[in-house]
Length: 60
Image (cartoon, rainbow, N blue to C red; front, side):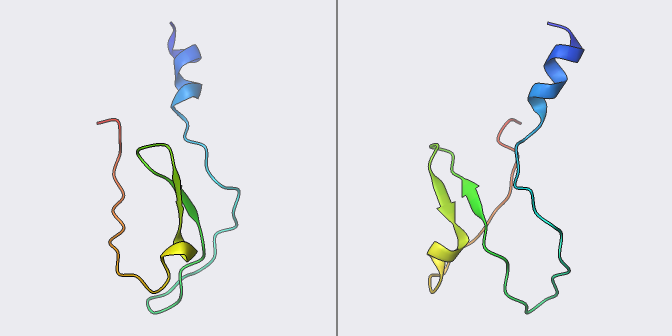
């Protein structure tokens, strides 16, 4: 496999969103993330719950 064939597969799919300015204290926009087990979790589903959101690269 050459780099030209491999590199496009490294791109992570993501939502097509317009970046908005968000400041401290503002509500975060709703988003959906892929879980390690293949499921999804939506920020709005966590409303009223305490949670910690940690971003990390899964392929280290």
